[in-house]
Amino acid sequence: MSFSDPISTIEWRVETRPIPYPEALADMEERAAAIHTGTADERVWLLEHPPLYTAGTSADRAELLDPRFPVYDAGRGGRYTYHGPGQRVGYLNIDLGKRGKDVRNFVHNLEGWVIAALADFGVEARRAEGRIGIWTDDAQGREAKIGAIGVRVRRWVTLHGFSVNIDPDLSHFSGIIPCGISEFPVTSLAALGKKVTMAEFDAALARRFPDFIAHLRRCPDKGASSA
Figure (tube, rainbow, N blue to C red):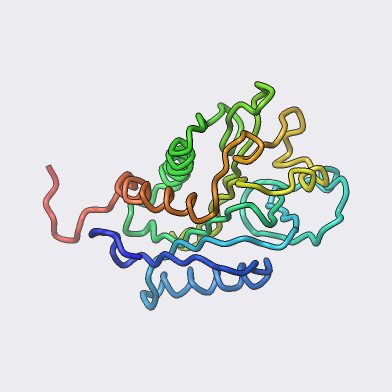
């Protein structure tokens, strides 16, 4: 898949098989290193994992309630999260060195990209003050989490990204306190009555991707004059 400049060189990769977490992590880190040295293009990598839990750098062991699935150190920010079938995971290797060197701006627009994609299916998703992630109202009218955000930046190249619950087994989240937030439930597109395939959600992400990239601040070209 290609897009109009300046993002035509960003690879868009979609997996058709569940990817083990250690394999994904090694691949992501290798790609980030290659982007830093100028030997690989930026990449958006869309995939699913087998059921597992990941621990961010702020993970509290007390929040791992029932380690019924493998637990992996992720190296990203945040706490415990769940990944599994029916959840779209997006790993982004984006070179912020040429897109403004602004991590906060990147995370804000990453959230906005996912919110915009969900809106294409009639889901009114939003940010929540003081709580990372993507939020909406569940079928019972409660505020619930439908997507997670976790990012790491190494030498101005991003790693990790987002996950969105399309139709996972929501009972799997009960093995942890997701992102350390126990007072709010987790929901999914399917739980909201939205029959959305993974391919349909990927298409929404693709439609909204150029706008996401366009909003990342870019450093001026060398030699360019500034007003």
